Length: 116
Length: 114
Image 1: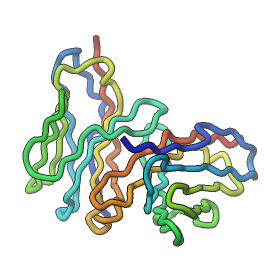
Image 2: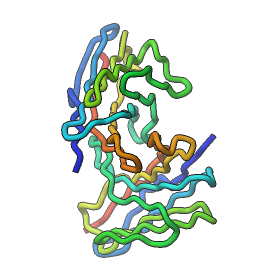
Image 3: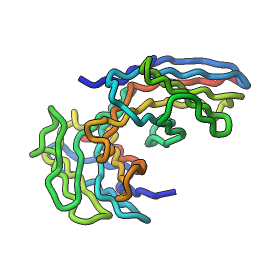
């Protein structure tokens, strides 16, 4: 099956710093990538949809200036959490969808972010 | 607001029993439905997709879809302790059908007791 690699798998950072998370599709080209956030005991909440070569579409309530998304190539999207605060601590998960129509999106392994 | 609803559980079944997980959705135009399994601390793993009314079987898993009732379910036969996980129901947002945007339910925690 298609492989999506997310890096790092966990990160601890200090308040006020920025953290970048990478999402790579290893064996397919992904025109669309999705970024989710999941708090403990809660479901996945879509943060933004990232389309290669264009600006990301953010969900209501997600600050686009705080969560910077870049999808510069068909195999890589990055999420940068800027000026991180403890309330940003969460499990961030990306998914990537192959360019072919009617195919499913595949999830990366997730990134556990802890802001101290 | 498009919604996907699941019982949060926990649902506890004995080993070897059938586990039944249920999901309802609000958007009647939805066409694509998915069940994901998520182990604690891990990302979701797709286990079933279903697009047409009726049943779809894959090994010990059976997905059932009833679009008229806006209801989708997942049956796990011969449940094993390794099936203990949170099961997420997801519906593709029909407005973004080609984009693949999914709406997730809150998940049902399943515990299979040896």
